[in-house]
Amino acid sequence: MVLTKDVDHPDHCKQYFDSIVLVHQAFPALRLEDVDLRAKFLKYEVNAPVIITGMTGGHPEVYSVNEKLATIAEVLRIPIGVGSMRPVLVKRGDTAVAETYKVVRRVARDVPVIGNIGAVNLPGLDERVFIDLVNEFELDALAVHLNPAQEVVQPEGETGFTVEVVEAVVRLAKAVKVPLIVKEVGNGLSMEAVSVFYSKGIRIFDVAGACGTNWVSVEKHRLPENDVRRFVAESLSSWGIPTPAAIVEARYIAPDATIIASGGVWDGLRAAKSISLGADLVGLAKPLLKKLLLEGYEQALKFMEAYIQTLKTVMFLTSSRNTFELRRRPIVILGPLLEYLKQRGVDVNEYVMAR
Image (cartoon, rainbow, N blue to C red; front, side, top):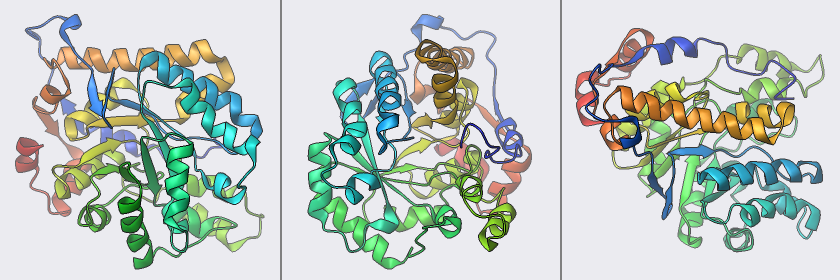
């Protein structure tokens, strides 16, 4: 459905990304080959700060999709996530379901593999379930996703985003021996949401802003024509925090956290802008999946190579030898992003100096 229906956020996000101006350096004082994209993430050294974020799993038909995505991650030596692992919990003992996830680690042996579970599903579940999950699937981290906007219009949605969820996340973080990543799924993390989990010791956040796939719109297409929630979903077609704004919200309130920027970060220029704005890594899903399903593995691999090469080129043109330097190169924030940040109480000049 993500590939066949119009389920992306409206293109107002272009204005937000266009509001970020990286200052061109006509004399970079380095060669392109001097640019080093390597990054440390989850005890690994990866070749680029780019994550193939979780997309799918749970149905035997997607086994080959995850296998190919894992191959791309291994070839490029970049992290990869899997889709929601709820099917594993619901269908315990179903080997075919489990294999759609296990294939990722089997293929991607030398890069971080990130599991994925819904935060709203945590209360009431025994933490030992997740200890076993981490061990069985050889996960390096477990992403816990917050998706209230999706759940509220989902046919089988659960809306219990209460303090019990926070308590369950805290218990889970203490129980498992890998880091937790608190993430959104496409409506963005606010500084208030980040603060709740940051104060409890979480140190990795994926902002998943409202610039890419809109899961509210996806759920709309699953609802009957006369279902009231369908009309609610239509009204929420542009709901959320644009990714550039979400990056700043997260970095502003959690200055020492690892921030992942995803949500419409679909080309290398947007990746460079996101890192310059305050992200440590970027993530993408839909455009890679689209390439893979419509054009095949080779074109999907080429797409990712071009993505990474574009990021490297922009770093060269900003005189940045690495992402640390990119975060410290001149940046100009204009237009709607500037206005948004001012109204959110962010001193933009101070933020730019401290990012």
